[in-house]
Each structure stands twice: as C-alpha cells, then as structure tokens.
Amino acid sequence: MLSVIIVTHNSEPFIDRCFDSLDQQTSAPDRVIIVDSGSAHTSYLDRYSSRADCEVVLHKNIGFAAANNIGFTHIGGAEDYVCVMNPDTFLEPDNFQSALAILSARKKVAILGGRLKGFDVDEDRPTGLLDSTGVFRSWYGRWYDRGQGAQNGENFRLEENVPALCGAFMVCRMSALRDELPKVFDESFFMYKEDIDLSLRLRKKGWKLLYAPTVEAFHARGWAGNRKEIPHQIRCLASKNDILLNFKHRSPYLIWAVAKYLAVRALRI
Image (cartoon, rainbow, N blue to C red; front, side, top):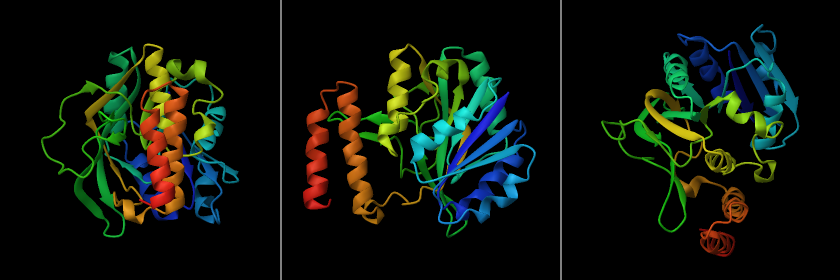
C-alpha cells in the first residue's frame, strides 16, 4: 500500500498539475493526504476534499516539517510505503511503478529519491536543466543538490547510495520510519534542511538512501535557482538551520555554518 503526503502553502499555481501527474500513474497511490499549512485561502483545495482517495487537513502555518508530521498521523498504518512530495513536483507516469519495484528488491533502502528535473511554471515547460540528483556535502561543509542547473543529459545516470535526498520527492519505506513516529521530521527546522536531518538519522541507523535515475519527476522550484530572488528572511532561516543541523549531528562544519549565518545576516548575501 502506498500513500502520498503533500504539504501546501499558497500552492494554487501547482496543485492541479501535481494531481494530474498522480492520476496518470501506472501504479496509482492508494491515498493522498494534503496538509495545508496556512494558505491565505484554501478554496483551491475544495475539489480535492470530495475525492474518495484524498483527505485534506487544514492548519495554520506550522512549517514544512510539522505539516508533514501531521500527514503521517493521518495515514492508515497499513502502508508499506509513503511518498512525501511537494505540490510543485510533477511525476512521470511510471514513477511509482518504478520506485516500488526498486524498493521491493532493495530491503536496506529507507528512502528512494529520483532524478528531479527543472520545470518553469510561468512558461509551462521543462527547463531542460536538472534540479537534484541527490544531496551532497562539499569539502567545506555546504550541502547542495547535485547537478542543479546542469543540462539534463546523460549525466548522473548511475543508481547509487547518496548522503541525503531532496524532500521535494521521497519514497519512504514505512518500516524504516516507524521508530521516528510521530515526528518523522524534526520540527525545530520549520522548513529547509529537515530532509537532510532525516537522511542523516536514518543513515546512522544503518539504512541506505538511494538515488534512482530511472525514477523521474519535474520540480518547479519556486525561486528557480536564483539566490537573488530568495527573500533575505528566508536566506537567514536556511543558514540558521545549517547551524542547527551541524550542531545536532556534532559536525566539524559547525564553524562554517556560523560564519555563513553571520555573513548572511550582516552582508545580506
């Protein structure tokens, strides 16, 4: 059994295309749980409330991590797999069929992430660029989405275990997450870096995180990869969470994280 959790926040430009991609799956999910975290209005979700395979939960703005945790409390308990995905993620039709086949054959994999490709909602077309092929850490401590901004070609075509996975699309084995319930994601993060934190916690328990390039999806990342378009307050939050992540996991990169946060605060970079 497969359930999907989608956290929305003013997601009207994306949600219909997201659901279209779910409806077109060759292996459709059994249930979809939408947790709205403080949208200015929620009428755009009304059409999904009446669907037999969908549940809509309305909440104040509690952040991505806490809203996903609410989603986990609404799953039935019989799920073998749960997909956590963003409303601006659009799946290729064979996405779930491929993902579940891989997970069923690889019992030590806790989470599978796919090949995320860029999508321009304003232009209504793929960008031709990659968005994420797994999350990696640089030599000096910065976590980054591998391949982001590179041409979508024959690069990164090998299946491999990776350090972390992007929270925009995660197909999770429930047996790997049961010990984390009821708070699969650490709510201290509010948003940003909670996916890396979960990845690190699962790896410490011996689980694998798999990048599967044959499982493809589009991700219409709201800021389109341009840091200048990200509000300063959001950049401060993201860099503050770098400190929290490195402190929590006793990482030597904590010094870099503190320096980055101070630079973002003072220099507005």
